[in-house]
Length: 126
Image (cartoon, rainbow, N blue to C red; front, side, top):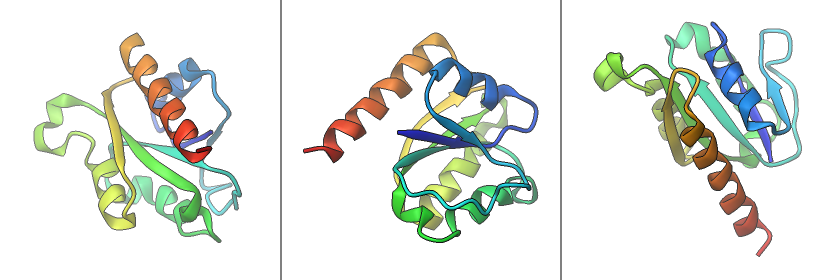
C-alpha cells in the first residue's frame, strides 16, 4: 500500500518516514501524478489554499478510485478544527476517515496506522 501525503513544516513527513512504507510526497511539481495502485492519503491540517494539491491529486485521472481512505494530521489545540482537512477530504470524496494523529505522531500512532494498512490489504485480497 502506498502512502500519499504532503508536508509543509515536516511533521507529516517525519511521521511517514517512521512508517517505513512506500510513499509519495506531493508538491506543486507532482500534484497531477497518475497512480494505478491502492493508497492511503495523509493530510495535514492547513487552510485549503495550502492543501489544494491533495485535491488536485485525487482529481487526476482515476486516482480517487485507488484511495482507500484518509488519515488526518493536526494539532489538538485547534479544537473543532483538529484534522479538518482530512475530514473535509473524507466528506468531499466519500472515502473513509481512517485515523487521526497529532504533530509527527507517537510510536502508538505508527503502530495503529500499520495495523490499519494491514487490515485494508487483507480485506482487498479476500
